[in-house]
Image (cartoon, rainbow, N blue to C red; front, side):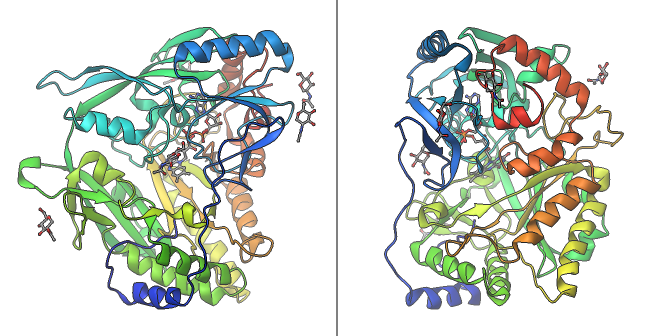
Amino acid sequence: MFGLAGGTASNSGALLLRLLAASLIPSLHSTNAGLVSAAGSPYNTYDGEGFPSCYNVSEIHRPKSVDEMVSIVKKVVARDGDKARIRAAGKGHMWYDTMCTDNGTTILIQTEEVAGIYEFDLPEGASEGTVVIDSGVSFFQLAQYLHDRGASVGYTLTNWNISFGGSIAMGAHRSSIREDSMVAAGALWLDIVDGTGEVRHVERDNADDDWLAASTSLGLLGIIARIKLRIYPDTKVYAKQDILDEKVVLDGDIYGLIAPYATANLWYWPYKRKFHHRYYDVVDAKQHPQQGFQNTFSVTAVEAIAARTILDSGKYLPTSNMLAEEIFFGLWSEPNFREKTNNTEIKNWPVYGWNYDVLIGGLYPDQKAQWDYNLRAYTLELAFPIPLANAMLKRVRSLFDAELKKGIVMTSTYRSGINIKFGKPYYDFLGQVTYNTSDGADWSKGVIMFDFPSFKPTVGDKKRFNEKFYTNLANTLIREFPCRPHWTKNTREVFAQSAKHIDPTHLAKFKAVREKFDPRGVYRSVIGEILGLY
Ligand SMILES: Cc1cc2nc3c(=O)[nH]c(=O)nc-3n(C[C@H](O)[C@H](O)[C@H](O)COP(=O)(O)OP(=O)(O)OC[C@H]3O[C@@H](n4cnc5c(N)ncnc54)[C@H](O)[C@@H]3O)c2cc1C
Ligand SMILES: *[C@@H]1O[C@H](CO)[C@@H](O)[C@H](O)[C@H]1NC(C)=O
Ligand SMILES: *[C@@H]1O[C@H](CO)[C@@H](O)[C@H](O)[C@H]1NC(C)=O
Ligand SMILES: *[C@@H]1O[C@H](CO)[C@@H](O)[C@H](O)[C@H]1NC(C)=O
Ligand SMILES: *[C@@H]1O[C@H](CO)[C@@H](O)[C@H](O)[C@H]1NC(C)=O
Ligand SMILES: *[C@@H]1O[C@H](CO)[C@@H](O)[C@H](O)[C@H]1NC(C)=O
């Protein structure tokens, strides 16, 4: 997030950060807590202590098989009856306290050790094949397994240390208009442990409400246990990035910037009034020996401390935030890639490499994830119909300008700016990119997502500089535009306000399936409650 590109970045921003950091090397400590198991304890996100995803957890089970999951659910339901509360837990890569219900004590079933990969099937010369995985398998694990066998999952991806079960449950996605990029779009069937402990097998079938609910289930139908996924022959891809003036995007053909590519997105720098335009597509592997590996979230200790120091001072001093955006923009303009074979920095666009390494990559071997250095964020993510893309971004601009008129400079306080993602239409009941809704909006061309992460100060009340700006921005967008929340990247308040934008017919059909799979509401969550599904 706030980490700076690794290695030997030589621009003045990096130099400045290093100078600042040289005088500031206090003791580092990771605040990531282990698993809790005491009665009524909070359970935390990947950010650790102080970042609860669930307030009241009495037991955490770590089954090793789907059969074990089933027996735990059966036992808990037999014992606790209508008071039984169960949620699956994956890798904890969610942002807010929206995993469980507040009504009762929840029992968690951690999927991490249910991580088998089976039935790899991609015949020589075939254009596509399949594989079956347990839901605790992470993107990184499957990518390695598939790459070793000359395959990949294509573009239905999220970041590396996230489980397939958690991604499909919550409607997670990459960014593409041309290709399917909802993780669920890569699934051909799901096995779900329902509210009685029975395993229900749900096949992809758009004429079946069970499938349309299971495709983005929010974990409310039960624990996703096994998934059959589409796979493809592995490919090499290029990554390229351009810098665009703000007005070129705000007044331009945004769809045209994204739709031609396998995957593409924009990063917005509101203080600089610039965008980065990142795009990827397939190349001929034989012509490109380079093996680029993207640095997703890794950072050196020195860089992390420098960034945190500047951003913490930005809680009080907007000039620090302006400086941070300058530095982050400069660093993000250069490739955040290394050559995988010898770990040397790649200096020029385009970068080439294997599908997963280039699209996602991971941590550099000599660095840690930024959150291990106490660089943490708030976030907000809303999806809007593509035909409203220009209007939405202009409205955001006008909110930044309204602050400027008051003499308040607002910036992006995130390593890679404000992430503007896209989604190809994909039909289900609760997904961010669904269509055929009664709101009259044209969702058939796909969506633009406004994903606004921002630094969470480690000092004072932990609120951001000009905190009310962020609340007003969210409220304004939700009030003025048809939009849909990402299901793990928003606060309860954002869900409460945006619930009115979810199609009532979709909600009613989802609720009917929920009542069938989980009649007692064992798997309920605050999101399900806000949506009126209980
Ligand atoms: C650094 C970072 C990068 C991210 N990148 C992206 C991205 O590129 N695109 C995107 O869309 N999202 C992204 N996310 C969000 C992430 O994909 C979702 O929050 C996802 O749900 C996390 O999965 P997890 O395995 O970590 O599950 P957890 O965080 O443990 O759980 C998330 C939710 O899913 C439920 N759940 C987990 N496993 C299952 C299961 N097997 N069955 C039923 N319910 C289950 C949990 O009960 C909980 O409600 C990112 C998050 C972080 C922190
Ligand atoms: C809490 O859950 C119980 C069922 O376990 C239900 O009877 C009660 O109405 C719920 N309370 C609230 C405030 O939702
Ligand atoms: C991935 O997540 C697990 C927790 O599920 C954690 O123990 C591990 O350190 C993480 N790996 C990385 C590289 O962050
Ligand atoms: C947790 O839930 C139990 C059962 O509903 C309740 O008695 C207890 O007060 C709750 N604890 C917290 C910290 O909310
Ligand atoms: C690293 O590997 C790349 C690609 O093979 C090569 O071009 C480069 O010279 C290597 N660098 C070093 C320092 O070995
Ligand atoms: C669109 O919605 C209508 C009414 O709910 C339904 O009959 C139709 O099948 C839907 N179309 C698609 C493509 O799902």
